[in-house]
Length: 152
Image (cartoon, rainbow, N blue to C red; front, side, top):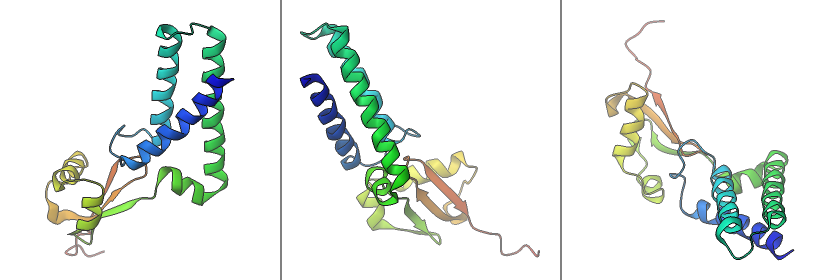
């Protein structure tokens, strides 16, 4: 029973830690998936090298974490505010071609990070970026400026 309680507390603790550490770790992995991967790995390691080598104990802990993940995922779908609390909301890093310095500092991001994402999207110059958005999954979306010289 203690293992199940420890697994649930570990899930909650790791979820909070990942939220505090910003969105950069894990790339395209959501923060909840990031927590799930690390916690499941930790449970399996503890069952193999820890003091308790019980398969039943390990299975119960893994099931507890899986159930917590399912519960949190369901709550995110049902309640948008809970989803925003757990996963965060998209943040604008560049607005109308201007850096949003307060957001950049808050996320501990350098302009080079945004430009790296822009280059992967085929945008080589900052002047071509209209918006850059830090998504909930940690990725950066780039929206190019519309070419005003084109007649439609």
